[in-house]
Each structure stands twice: as structure tokens, then as C-alpha cells.
Amino acid sequence: MKYKAPESFYFQGGSKAILLLHSFTGSTIDMRQLGKFLNREGYTVHAPMYTGHGQKADTLLQYGPSTWWEDVQSAYEFLEDEGYEEIVVMGLSLGAVLTLKVAYELNPLAIVTMSLPMTRDEVTLRKRVVYYAKQHQQYEEGTDEEKEAARQALKAHPMEIIPAFIEMIEQQMQYIAQIEVPIYLAYGGQDDALYEETANYVAERIGSTQKVVKCYEQAGHLMTYGKDAKTMYEDFLHFLQQLHWKK
Image (cartoon, rainbow, N blue to C red; front, side, top):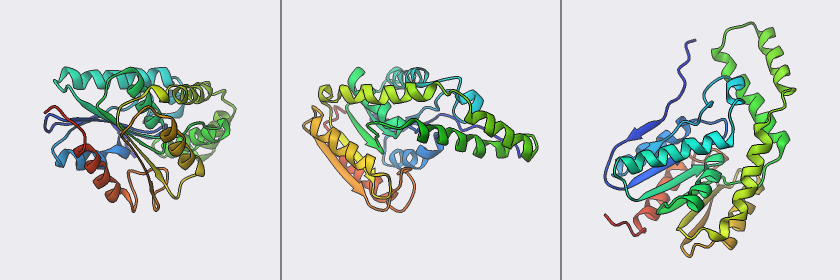
């Protein structure tokens, strides 16, 4: 089976721009449906594919949060270079953490977070990498025995990016009181309780005066797909329409 890695996408629309940020071990495919919805509503939408994502697990592990932050900065600068003066950033999981970093270090008009974690444990993240490797192996050459051996070897890999990822999450939690842009915090009712706790934690401490916290009861971690996705999209649209855009 021939494999084509997911790529960044850019849907041109009106003068209002949205930057979409995908999750750890995810891809721009996870953000495409939301991106198309927003583009149909007149927004320009850009979603970068993080370096190493969509590739073999060994390639993914060669990079880390500092590289992915550089990818986000480049994507944000791309929209600015295209002439978009006001940008709203929406992120899922890792993308939500990076969205907080954008709000703290750059100057977005507003932010939306989905499945935002205030911490993660190393065991869970290591399992996610192994699962990612197994999913990607369906496109790779080799016998079942060779692929199983590769997964076992991966389990013993130090995965230095995992502690770095956890550290980045915890760093962003230290800066939330200094974030003052409007924020929409979404979490799934079928997801781990951590994400509800995080949404409420951030809402109580963030410097923003305009903030929304909402649970989507039928949603899991990948909130951009599933039973509540269309309702969530409409809610995001309403949030965008309430912002004070210059144009």
C-alpha cells in the first residue's frame, strides 16, 4: 500500500484568519473537517503539519516540542506575511498547549482549546507513540515478525521528547494568568476527567475576561470528529462572530 504523508493545508477565504494546530501523533487530517467548515463560512484557514509527524515513529522521535513550536511560529508568520493582521488560533491536545503558548508569546485575536491537558504522564504518552508506530507500520515493508520486533525495540527507546513535552505543558500552565485574549475551552464528556479539570483550572486562573468553558457530552479526545463535532463547530463560529475584528 503506497503511503502519502498528510500535509499542511491553506484554505484562502476572507480577511479573517484561523490557525489550526493538531495533536501529538496526530495530523492535519484531524483538523481538515473543521478547517473546511470555517472556510465555507468565509474564514481563511491554515493548518501546519508538525515536523516528523506522519512519518515513521523513529523519525517522529528525532524531533520534539521546540521544533513543533518553530513550526507553529512559521505558520503564524506565514499568515501575517499573507497580509492577515488578526488571527485566531485553535488547537487540539498538543495543539491546545501550543495555542496557549501563542497567546502568551504572540498576539492572536483570540484562542480556542480542545482537549487541553494541564499535565500528562510519561507512560500514557509512550504508549501513544507505540500505537502510532503500529498504525504507521501498515504502510511499511517487512514481515509481521519484523514489525513486532521493531515495536518491542521502540518500547525500550528513551523517547527524550516525552519529558520535554510534559515540561512544555507544565510551563504553559505557569503563564495562563498573563493571557488576556478571549478564550473558548472545549472538552469531551467521553474523555478522561483530566480535561474537564484542566478547562476549569485554566478558566479560573486565566487573565481573560471573555471566556467560555463547554463540555461536549458525546465527544472523546479527538473532538474535531464524532457526534458532537457539528454542534461544536457552530459554537466556535458563534464565538468568532462575537469577537471584535477590525475588518
